[in-house]
Image (cartoon, rainbow, N blue to C red; front, side, top):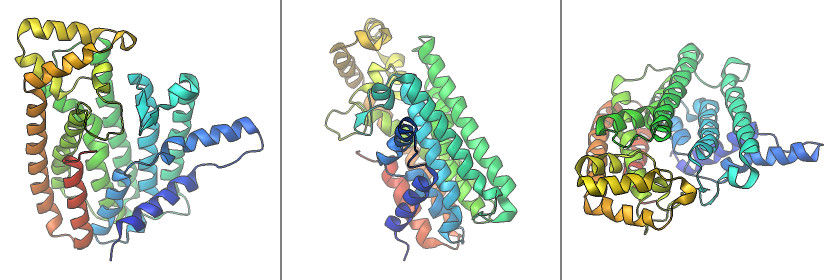
Length: 338
């Protein structure tokens, strides 16, 4: 019997085993506590769990993917620290973002250090304590590097549009950005890396399915951010205060009356510190224009297509219990309410 709680407990232990605990110098010891801050805030460990399940679905013990899954979760955490700084976010997982409490320089350094521990964890596969199938180690490292490089490219697009004040981002441009920024490290990477940990060559359908499901995941995240009645890990309407370019905004600016679009553009372009209740007025405009409903419809369509393709790709694999867990987790992620 494959218990998700067992996988997630082992993943947590692997993550915190990589991070230092104490140091004789009290300031360094405090730094170590900051390294553990974001990982200790919890989260669903979706990416690492998917990787372990993919390893099992491809016929190997899930433990073979443990080092790589821990490295992937450390990647997620240092990227979130940097992302919160870049977006000037207020909250992360229900608590103030790290740069809000420790300051930007310290938070940047914590993110950099977690980046180092990510590579240290991954490189265990090249040292004497490798877990993954040795014949796929070169492909495994190449795939991990490819995944995080695509994530950085997507983040660059996102940040550049904000820095340049560009609001008329097409739906196609948005979808390309989130495929790079979110889909590859949220779904595609975990599925493909799990296969490689098991010593298998990933089915090409995993990538296509993962792109659809990762895009659906991000669009749903964008919609949840604008729903006041949802228990959500980031601040309500934070995407508007940060002027994040989303499919919701892409639809709105493509369909709103010109005067209404101009007013929203001026409000969104203000510095975060100058924004207030007018963001709620912009949110009402988005709702009237049908932009939230449209984005949710796109998310549902992409999720349905991705799940159908993923079901095909997983059907012939030896680990069908793990495959069923993958389908369940990704179905829940693409349609989640929290």
